[in-house]
Amino acid sequence: MLKIGILALQGAVREHSRQIEELGCEVIPVKSVEDLKEIKGLVLPGGESTTIRKLLDRYDLLEPIRAMADKGIPMFGTCAGLILLAKNIVGYDSPHLGLMDVVVERNSFGRQVDSFEVDLSVQGIGEDISAVFIRAPHIVAAGENVEILAKHEERIVLARDGQFLGCSFHPELTEDSRIMKYFIEMVQESTMVFGKMDH
Ligand code: GLN
Image (spheres, rainbow, N blue to C red):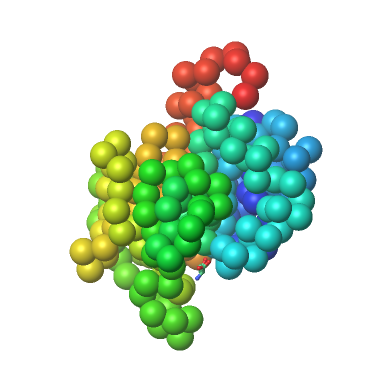
């Protein structure tokens, strides 16, 4: 069974697990370097990016996750997870993981009370995909190889940069698992490309 890791230091872990299991994969909660060993894809959940970053440092996970990215392991960042993946964060001198070729701005749709739900049309995935935004970031700019998959009010809210998928909202908080399915397919494709390579 395909093993998908979820960074489980803080944030929306349980909801992602449910969707991943319903799609027929095994979930490995990632809390230490050991947990990274067998996974073929990694989900970085929402939460508070600055807190998750502190925990990544405390548990010595930042470099091992970067090393996995170097090996081609697909990664999916939702909300705070997108901020962790981004190469640039507006107002910050340095990124966290710095892997995905996008510039993100934090809390760009208002404060916590301003959480909202909308239906999005997502390129290559489908129509009427409900998306829950909670103090969400958005993608201000994207590198030329980044595919823009969805926008809300002219702002980029879902994009793919090769092995990296990042979204502003929380796809795990709805019954609609089409975006997670898309990510699982990215993982399946990457295991085929790498064949028997140990990654
Ligand atoms: N506002 C949070 C941050 O900047 C992200 C919020 C979320 O993940 N729901 O890290």
